[in-house]
Image 1: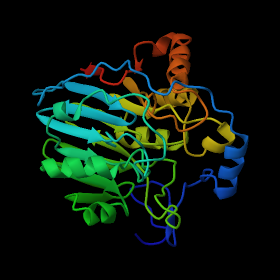
Image 2: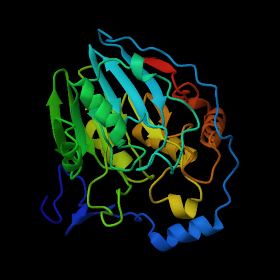
Image 3: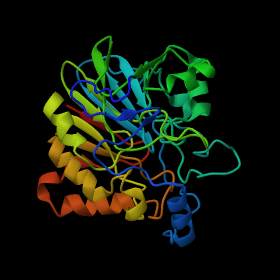
Image 4: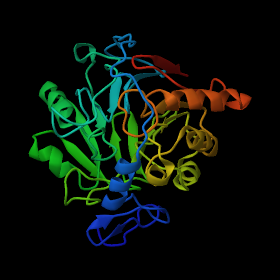
Amino acid sequence: MQEGASDAGFPKHFKGKHFYNPDAPQARGFLDVLRWKLTSRPEPSPGFISDVEQTAPPRRVEGDGLRVTLVNHSTVLLQQRGFNILTDPIWSERASPFAWIGPRRKRKPGVSWDNLPPIDAVLISHNHYDHLDLPTLRRLAARGDSTYIVPAGVARLLRSENIGPAHELDWGESLSLPGFTIHCVPALHSSRRGIYDRNTTLWCGYVIEYPERLVYFAGDTAFGPHFRQIREKFGPPHLALLPIGAYQPRWFMSPVHMGPEEAVRAHEILAAKTSIAIHHGTFQLSDEGIDTPKRRLIACTQHSPRFVGSFLVLDNGQFAEIP
């Protein structure tokens, strides 16, 4: 990508060798991480919660109806017209480069690996370990027949692991597949997998354009003007997958993560017919408790009658039928 380039009306977000959040705060640096860890007062949560009832999705869903299954965290299975899409898949025990340290799952996936149907397309929103989990992607690649859609700069990692085909998209770029089109759209976040690669690859959301409906997968994002930009460009989505977790403390997390109240505002700005909460309930990545985002979102929607029934909070393994 050329320095300062802009795609399809979205703002500039690349300079030199690094991507950035346009007209918005940037992710906090190393000293702020130390300050957070030294002053952190995390809300207690159980070590492991054995309340997940795993489900077995159908191999295919024919017709115009959309079946949406929350697997865990930001992993969602979208099934329509005989085509299966998986977002940010993670089945690993830890969201970490190591098997022995790092955030450990507090709930099992809502779909067992053996019951995962064939996956035609995999959407990766950015390269953080809780969203780009190489062990899971290797297992998917071994099954074959999946296409991977990733943000700019991320395909190199997948290809080095023989995971593919991988298609890179920048904000405003699109990929047409049989029966639908994937559009790459802005998010406010950051990227990093090691010490020296901060923001050298892009982060994004995706709009899936079916003939019958629009589905918006926000990935990981802070609250910002991109929600209005997405609505103005594509129209109100029939379904929005919006993150609600990993938001405390706000002084540290607000440049990269929404809280439940901001997710409700995003739902309203998008004018989404239905939203489903993601990025909660499986890994405790910040100071709020594992189920605090869910409780706060439910409280927000109950206090505002127009949101009741239109912003869903699914447990791992639960699914919704979107007309």
